[in-house]
Length: 174
Image (spheres, rainbow, N blue to C red):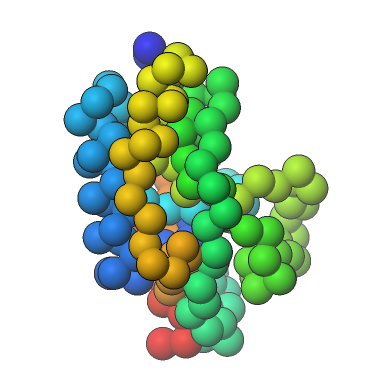
């Protein structure tokens, strides 16, 4: 299946090295079974200002200085007909996550979608129910069933996932 091209900017949450290794291992394991582009493990937080510049970077740095890394519980495996949510790990709508999202939206004057479904995609594309069931069996869960959130990235989405570009990253509490 050809993935639709996307265009815009978004804020992603990124993970600790340990969580990143675990997610990458799972992504590689399931990608061996089906066709999917590779991409950076992330949790999409919300759309970002369309013309990010040094002022946006400075505001983001000030914001992340006040944040502490946190664990985000993973609650299950999901899938959707939307190609960019084809196969993913469902994440909890935890208070720290929702507060972070609300505060960041307010800082940049953004209107977050109220139907937010936090998740960490493992695959993009379109898969049959049989493929989804087979893929679910391949996911290896960490003992904590959580990921460690440690930073925010500002990402330019243009074209296919291989062409997306992290244009700025800011670590929490650093």
